[in-house]
Image (cartoon, rainbow, N blue to C red):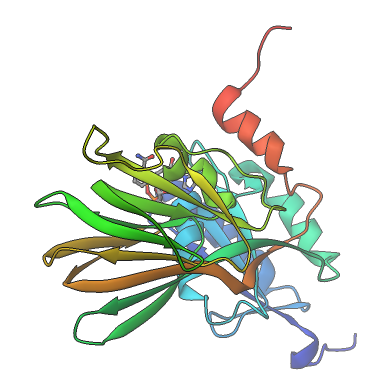
Length: 277
Ligand code: NAD
């Protein structure tokens, strides 16, 4: 039997959450892939990241590997009840293994969001979001100018603002009353969080879809503490000068498996379910 060169092997990382069922699935995948000559298990520079858990686990794995988006593809196994980024159920692991064995590197790419935060002291932080990024002011009303592609669009007053990706449109954005966007539409969605609207203060009131290449800037008008979230991570900053949002040059790539459920099938499955015709 000829041994495969190390460089010919597919490097696979298995990332599971702490649930008993996830650990069980991870152990099975680990044992099978370790004994298969075509694969090399490593968390360093993997070609494929298999997440086991739910959407939260996939979001965490995305943030672990967001510096390697050019080379890494993701595939999710869900052991919970709802999976938006996960293609396989925990009882379909054998099917996933067969797919990985015949994998030719095909991928499905979705847009992600680039967020740049500038503080008043000049410090700048850049992050990538798979679902959305939000800014909120908790102690008092957030007052902020919304600038879209250099147009001073509105002065927002309210709890905060969310900017979501197309795949994130079914997450927090949907709860905020935003529209569901198909991920082939490379656009961002700005959604208000409890805006103040009366005879004195006015915002557009509906969510806005912003095309690729257009940039959104949020410029807080009051000093204070701001809560910034990027997917499942939150940060607190004093005195935020500006936050910029745009579609990132890179995309997230998923393993294009026959089970890679179509976006509308996911939406139906998650929110509508079966119905009597
Ligand atoms: P979590 O455990 O609170 O999960 C929130 C729920 O959102 C889970 O059911 C998850 O499956 C679902 N979800 C995640 N991404 C989704 C997507 N793209 N489409 C549809 N459903 C999706 O938190 P977590 O697992 O750490 O996930 C963080 C995400 O939770 C955030 O990115 C945000 O979108 C979402 N969230 C939603 C609300 C809300 O709807 N009111 C509030 C806060 C956060």
